[in-house]
Image (cartoon, rainbow, N blue to C red; front, side, top):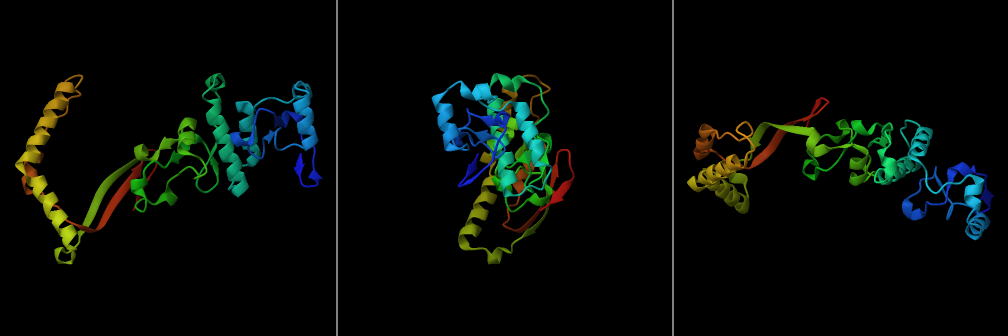
Amino acid sequence: TGADATYAFAPAARVFDGLTSDDDAPPLVLSADDRLHAAVVAALARYPGLGPALGMRRRPAREDLRFFAAELGSGPLDGAGVEAAARLCRLEAAALTTAAGTEVLAPLPVPDASGRLRSATEVLYDDAPWLAGRLDRSRVPLAHGKVERRVAAALGCRPLSRAVDETAGAVTPRPAETLPPAVAAAVAQWRSNARAPAFRAALRRAHARARLLAVSETTAPVLDAGRLESLKRVDVVAAERLESRFDLAGGGGTRA
């Protein structure tokens, strides 16, 4: 193996002739078509039985992926290390769609945003763009950006949208006289719509339909008549500042 005029020997057990660059084979997993010396690639192409005779396999087993991940160390990983870990995750996600995916193995570690490898059950993938700029992501165990959401989900990472609960806090209204005309008009329209009898009637119809579709009385939604009537007095304002508390399931809260 090697590049330019520098070569090194690689154990045949670490060379997989079923991987190509399109498979995103990581640096720790050699691909016979583009990572070996050209003469070796030519010999493998000419003699189909040569690879297996030397101990080569088509693709790494899931146990191999865990071995390669352990070789990376716990981190923090550098750029190449993160890329290698992300590629191992992609190969694991692909393996989970095959019969090999039925094997019960320890979760493959996933690189978090800081480049440290963590159990997939401890890592979240970001599927909540509406929280951008509002949530202190440094306090959230997010998967590294090199790990695609579909891959993170396949490996058992939880979605951020389901792991975080937002509790509204203080609201600092913006003085009405400072609002641009278009914003002031929109606020007035929202206020009027929320207080309108037609809006409350629509909510009653939606509630009645939900009760008809409920599986049982215990799962049927309950209409709070008092809260519904309070919409007559609801106010809508443009906020200068919103304070929220975000609580993560299985972790502490963080403020934005």
